[in-house]
Length: 280
Ligand SMILES: [Zn+2]
Image (cartoon, rainbow, N blue to C red; front, side, top):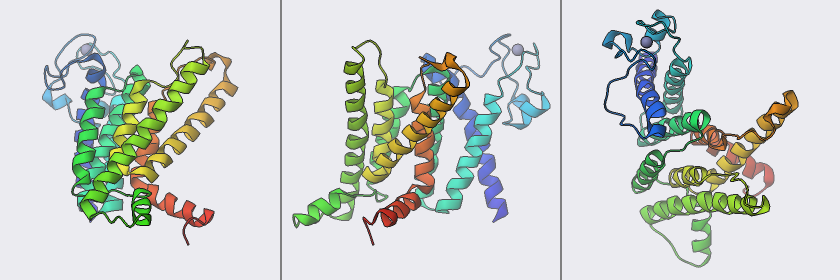
């Protein structure tokens, strides 16, 4: 079993290396296939033996082999994070279709977490691909159909499994994206149309998460993401006033919350429902 975890972790490092390419190139609209990776300063192509995730960074001690310019520690961090997320996903879902679904979800979210953090960009190529993927998965892997299932049953309408699942995915997307769009509009108008507080990228990110999650986990993602964002934002403001007017990468917080929700959200949801007495 340990071997399987190590294998998955190693796969994660390799995928993480590819995610790094996506993170640095997608916001600029560059191809993620060609050209080969090169040093941003001296333009030297990275040699194949210097392109091992994590390991190469350690061997080269974080510097380009040719011009010795420091390589951002974010590269090995993204690789390690991807390995960790895949290992955790396997720990939660075992060898199952859900493992594939949430591995892909986690990796797409890692890309968005970092493009928003580094460039304040949430590429449509990622979110549209993710949305399509989420919808596709909903045909095979049941998506939480609450509260639609309840409402329909109340009217004596009984949906079959696949229909309920797809309906749950669509409802999740509409609630997630719709809520964000509405909140963004309100702030935009309240702020005298001076500044956009929530970009359309956030709407797209939540549309995507909704197709994977259905309504309950989508709402939880918004709640958790806002909570993490506010706590961190207030803490940073308390530390230094220069963060006043700082443009916060809200998509980064939402992405982190979404990765958590995909792994452990149902546990938190059940706990909350018992605690609040919604379900016995
Ligand atoms: Zn170089």
